[in-house]
Image 1 (cartoon, rainbow, N blue to C red):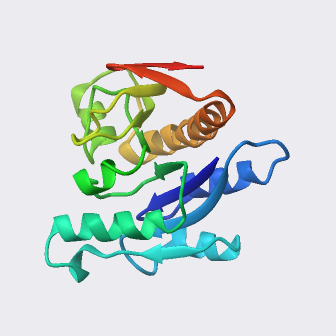
Image 2 (image 1 turned 45 degrees about the vertical axis):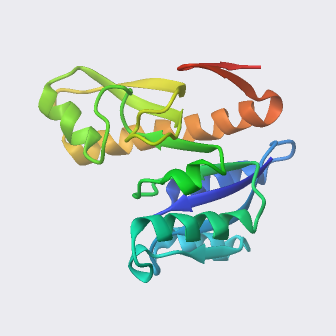
Length: 197
């Protein structure tokens, strides 16, 4: 299974996929890495691994719709079987989502705490458990069908950074395992229910 991974920051999820793809028998490989900004560690990780990369910045286009189409064209050049949004901090629009199946990760147990401040929101809500979700992206913000989830207990002395690091460790492993299961057998999606084949 050929992946294009989209990232906006340090690329630790990307690195987890690069490392997994190097294992014999792992059913996916990273064909390219896309970014929405230059000078980020995710692009450096791609370069070190010898993986092609590209950058499509919102500011280089007249509006979000034009950016969405340009990003879709850049990704299409690599003919991916699946696009992985791995810490990509942009909402993908209809031109993109109409062309590709996109898997996203989120640092909470969706549908709880969608959006960019999920870890902070969970702490402020006083919940005792949060976690990580891998889901299919749709037109909403973290609203697509859930593929896999794993809980992370919130400890009494957790702050946002400490909790987020524990969630990220789960998120990396869960993403690698989910991509492996999709690569080996695929899945069926019935409404909001996702079942591995």
